[in-house]
Image (tube, rainbow over the protein chains, first blue to last red):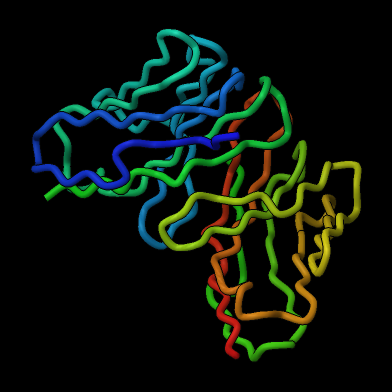
Length: 114
Length: 113
């Protein structure tokens, strides 16, 4: 079956613009996670959804970042007023149920803010 | 706050060599520890997961050990191959209900033919 997919694979934007990054989890997976990986760093947790609700958003760096999962499947990470420091690879992962051991990762979206 | 450190940051070895990658974590209250592989431009692939009650896990040429009390894990790769070249990431999941993984910065491995 299909794995986690993320679109776009690459996004280049200008400072101050708004961007949306999309994640399609594995079909039937109820838990969805967003991580951010800066160059030379390991992934850092942003937010976790169980179903439609954000169960843990403690990793969102500030109020310019927001994520939704309105139907409990596809999720969108939204970044307002982008800054150069937002440039990173944004990774999405899903797992079958909350608490399941394995998180399956997508290929990521590389965001570049000029 | 949990911190995960991986040493070395980069490693270059000739094909066929056995090697060890190291991971340490500051808070021993973990639920499990996982080793991932990351290839350029691709997502993470889970290699081995060790529950906190376990000491080691094996898969093919890979063996991961866990010493929770000392906050250490090692990933042993036997008879390395050029196809093993990738970045290897260690991640822990904390006890306490949070689903998030805390990652190290990774070890970039190059296996030369």
